[in-house]
Amino acid sequence: MAINNNEILETIDMLDSQNLDVRTITMALSLFDCISEDPARTAQKVYDKIIKNASKLVQTGEEIGKELGVHIVHKRVAVSPIALIGSSCGQFLPIARAMDKAAVEIGIDFIGGYSALVQKGTTPYEKVFLDSIPEALSTTQKVCSSVNLASTKSGINLDAVKIMGAKIKETARLTSSNNSIGCAKLVVFANAVDDNPFMAGAFTGIGEGDCLINVGVSGPGVIEHELKKLKGADIAQIAETIKKTAFKITRLGQLVAENAAKRLGCGCGIVDLSLAPTPKVGDSVASILEEIGLSEIGSHGSTACLALLNDAVKKGGMMASKYVGGLSGAFIPVSEDVGMISAARRGTLTINKLEAMTSVCSVGLDMIAVAGDTSEAVIAAIIADECAIGVINNKTTAVRIIPVAGKKAGDEVSFGGLLGTAPIMPLNFGDPSVFISRGGRIPAPITSARN
Image (tube, rainbow, N blue to C red):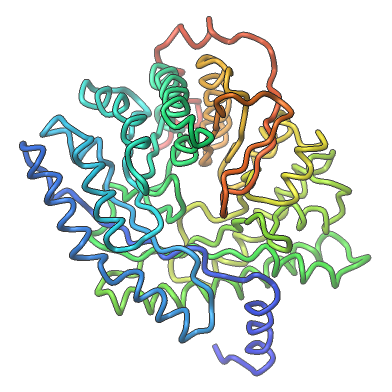
């Protein structure tokens, strides 16, 4: 496909003034060749493999960014689920520390994969792993953790949901001196994907290759800029413009992915074409929805506008990349989007409306700050609700919730950097503890009976 001068100038303008960036280059590493029965040996092999493969990841990202004139924000590594890698040796914290040591030495932003897949049941070693998560996140700098609790094929593991409600609270307590920041590195899923390059949920699935480069692009500001030109346009024109713009954004991601894979000697994995906002003005998913026609995100119509945006982004990006994967759509992390922060402050954007919007966005309840005294049962019930949305609709949903120690509804907390500022959102006062305490597994829906 030939590229004309107008397209070159458009892309330069996107980079210069519309906050277009490549949000992350994530190296996906399989660690199955690191398994041994000795904890120290396993940890050492994990450290060695990360250093061997990813030592030039940051340098390569910087070089590509300078050559293409694009800001590559994050360089990250995602590894195989550590609950599986450490099962033979029975200890997981030494692996977490080895991951963190390697991440610090090679200079990456985060390393994901301190993860478990327990959607149908929890083995004894996985229970040990889940118990280790709070300490792992409170004693490391860069390690991120995720747990898949449900799937459309398996249903919802309510026992594991209950455990994670408690582990989130414990993580908040152990990092209370820093606004319970450990919870920002912990996400729980339904229908987690194997090739997600975004943190905190990135891990390398068991069907993935040995070493791959996955790229996550972004660019909410670019889409907002294009929609500003469409005053009076009908909704079909809005969708078509989003599709065309997503195509251009994704082409940049594909170019970066191919360059990085070649230079690092890895396979070229996927491009995740998600719109990932930041607290920066002009880089907001909320602003896109408001440009479509809402007075403020959270108002009636927000779910419909988000559904349009998510679908159009996917349709536009699919033609621009050899392999589209990850989550691919629109993220709605409250603390990381200036428009959502504003709407949450005013009460327009509530937890109930956010839950409805997660039925059509690319993930779920993300970077939600709640009162520090929120009970384990309430957190578990919020997780169960999101899992139900994902399981019934056969989509990925997630919860990254932060019960901030010492804070109550109406307060605010600043996490700094791209994690932004979060108003403490009020929750329903009902008590779901009897439901959560029943345990067991919520059966898979009838739609799971396909093969």
